[in-house]
Image (cartoon, rainbow over all chains, first blue to last red; front, side):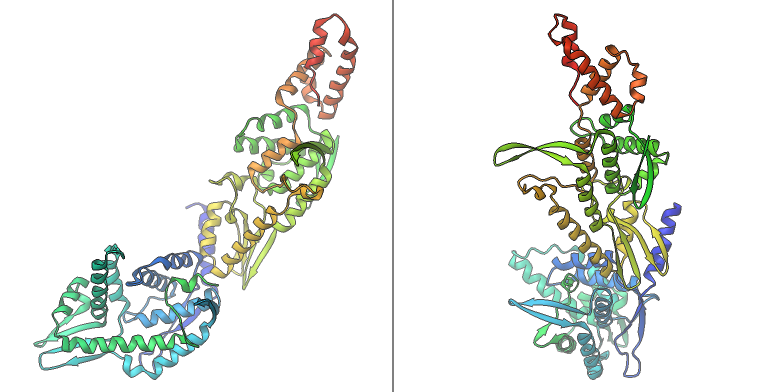
Amino acid sequence: MSLENKELLNFLKDLSTQNTFSVNLYPRSVDNIPSIECVPLTTSQLKKLIETVVDSPITQSVFNSTVTDIFKSCTKSSLPNDVNIIDRLLFLIETRINSLSPTANFKEEEKEIAVDFNEIKANLQKKLLENLSDLTSTSFSDNQIIINYGLPLLEAETRLNEEVYKKIKLKVDDMEEFRKTLGEAFIHEIAKTITSVEVNNQTLHFNTLTFSDRVKVVESLPSSAVQHVIGFIETYKKIIEEALTINGYTLSIDGSLFSIR
Amino acid sequence: MVFVTQIAENNIFCEELTVKHYKNILKCCYGEQPNKQIFVETITNILAELTKTSALFYKNLSVIDLFCFLIDIRINSLGNSTDISFTKDNKKLNLELNLNDFKDYILSLKTNLDTTITTSNITIFVECPSSSRLLQLQTQNPNYISFIKRVETSAGILNVIDDSQAETLFDNLPPSVSIEILKYFKNVIDHISNANYLSKYGINEEQLTFVPSLDSLIWFTKLLFSESLSMLYENIYCLAHVAHLSAEYIENCVVGEYIYFVNCLKKTTKPQENSSDSNTENIDNQIGEL
């Protein structure tokens, strides 16, 4: 490596450690709100986020994968194993505040709406604490089966994106294919949320399976059991949507968050 | 003889341009698309010789400072005006360009290009790129990357040496800083687009605008030193053949002396215009107008 490039890399390393900020993650309990130190977004990472603006609205897989990669590279220490999609959302909002600006204007139906991300962050943290019991990992059991489920972990979503969504070439004008993809996305949400299934005292941990095997297991589960998982998914999505809604406007969590100054 | 000029806030003593240097300037600008590398190499070597400095100093000089120095050399060798022609209302018009005034216009561009961008604890020094940076470009015109000169933070100072370094640095800057750099560059483009020198004469149909690029530098160098190469060679031949001056002597003369000798030769050969000596007629017709 030439002296100039070595000097450049050392300089860039020092640059990245300046202006760090901390992100309060999803509360593991009322008394346990972990926090991690992050470095600010770089221009290169911002470009990648903006490129995801044309991501599929059904899967948002490219945006989600990009944010997960950036989340991992921006944290000063390695992420815990149980880091979930809400941790990522909290990181996203905090990094938006620290790397671009704490406010932005969005257009909706010719109206311009001013959004204060600090307000969104405070709202989200408040909602999480208020609804902790509804968001905590739980299980459903009947005489035959126990299904454990909770907030989707980033590990599960990464696997879904790598194994499934990366290979999809969605043709929106093909209605049959569109319907099929929509249906599969629904099953994938369920498969992300379930962590394990116990049958006859034998536990199948989903993190040991490929995603397509997870889907096969989900499709074989009784619908009466799966209904509870769907209820959980609807609950946490509703809590998040309410937290992201200020003055009647719901913030979209996608690449457009970073293309507006 | 020497003259003094100011380059990047330094006083530089410069010798007068000789015919040899003048010839090399015309040669490196010759043709529809002169080779940019050869142009830069030739010009910087000439300036280095005239000022007894290194060519590297001129290669790292901003292209605006380099151009201003060329204007000074032109003023001190061939006078402070040059003719340009353009079209207005379908008529061909000539304008005598005052080079001192034109240099002021070029320097006013520089004040808008050289600046600092400071956000939180990062300071970016941006300025008009040097000819060596412009030689690295893959495209015709520079982009914002070429304008990044130096970065200062509490972690240290980094002097950007090439566009590849500038690009790596830019990609690793916080977006709040990189956005300011892009805004600065947009202002540069807007300012240059609206900086038509001819507008002060009420001429808006034609453009005389210096763009910080090598193509623009070459074009304006051709404007400053507009004698054709063939005419120069013909005049040297006539001075040698008729005035019996050695080619070596002519090449070591300063340009002002060369012009003087050519004018003398024209005066001495003119009375012979009406004589029956056809050789003299041919020589007189061959002596070019400067």
